[in-house]
Every structure is written in C-alpha cells, then in structure tokens.
Length: 106
Image (cartoon, rainbow, N blue to C red):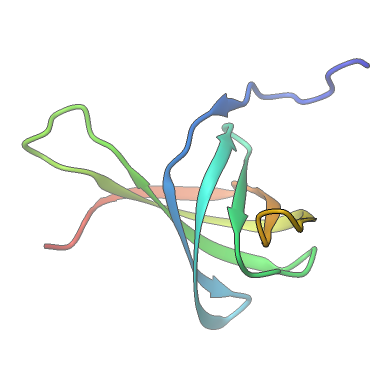
C-alpha cells in the first residue's frame, strides 16, 4: 500500500477539548492519537458527524517548565469517524485549517 498523506504524522498523546460544533458551544474531552500540519486523529467518547465544523483545543506542553503548558486552539472539519467498541470511544479524524497558541488561563 502506498502512503498518500502529504504531511508526516507524529504519534503524540495530548489532552484535547472540543469546545464548539458548527456555531453552537459544545463540551467534550478527548486525547490526540497523532497529529500533522494538516490534521489530527483523536479519541473521544462523543460521536461527531462527518463534515461538521469543530473548534478544538489541544493542551500543548512547553519545554520551559516555568512558562507551563499552552493551549493550541484549532479550527477544522471532521473527515472520518470510526467506532472503537472495545474502548467505548470514537476515533475522529479532523482537518487542522487554522490554529493559534495561547497561554493557559490561570
């Protein structure tokens, strides 16, 4: 099988929050499975329809422990949803269309 992805994926597990679906506020938790410059695969206990626009936040660690972690705010669309019945979760692939780093609020 030939790899068709245009961006390298990095296996990284970080906490993730979904904060908006479409134009409506929303709240769900998850964890990233892998990440690239174009998208993310994450596990969550909620199912989100394919095509749905989402806003999600990844808690990004900071190398300088004095500064603490940062939030990576992301906007994207759900591309694929796969149920994982053994873990009672969904694997959700989403685009990474826009993003911005911010400091966590204290």
